[in-house]
Length: 356
Image (cartoon, rainbow, N blue to C red; front, side, top):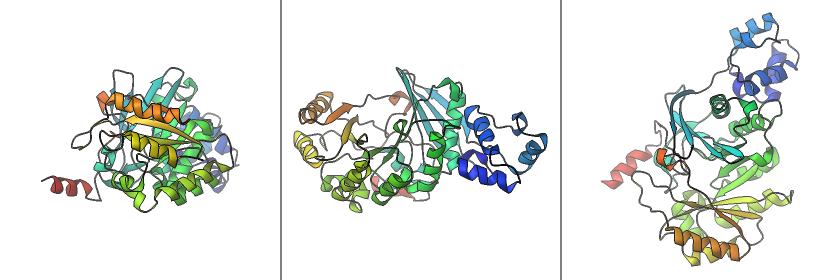
């Protein structure tokens, strides 16, 4: 039993199954997540008998860090090898007064958004809860431990669509939020989705963290091309789900991510369509300069085009910021994560055949 990915209630049940008191879960949570300890013999407030029993029946097993890169701006990217032989990528972005960890939720991605390097790799499988929280565990150790507070925010914006791995993602997020583990506020945990409408409603009920939506287009025709999931859950359906998500809490806003693609979605007409579409939705818009990757057909919008687009949105009263590109010199910027994926979907082969 890998204890790393067990949320508090499940960990209590595990100890009860061993004939132990439920409070043992609190002790082990602190050792594992707050202190970064993976050796049961080092957990000195447990009895020797329990430590021996844990060593025989359980483990604290994390993905293996096999490579690290650091960008000129201080961004750090780790390549983590999984037991299956695949590898994923995790990114730490330091800023003044905060540090954000970008976490992956799948090996590759099944959604095939056309502007994303992860989608081009194809898809292999969902990550387990232990593999998701293991990214935070490993990064925390690399950055001085949880108590050093280098990581203040976590975003599930790495490889994969988090809501297609709902159960494991929620288990991991509950550990992120638990005071005996990482103790993050819901305001500091953000889940990004391409628009899995039923799962958005389920997330609102089970673990309502900050929600970001990969929007990227102000009309269905264009979004069908950029985000194929839109054909199943079109914009009207998606925006209704966003309104429901914020309805019970006036403090919540949806962050809409909008990658700026030269000549594709960056005209003033697109900006005005976006304004009309988001009326009545508590929204914040992140404009993301496109980050190129090998084989892409897209180009980044010129800075003056991005600025003009932003100014139109601001003039209409929409909270809008242009995301600063971080880590692009080590392929760690938004949309560039690729890892090493044994593609069960055969998508990369189809793309190669189409290119030739």
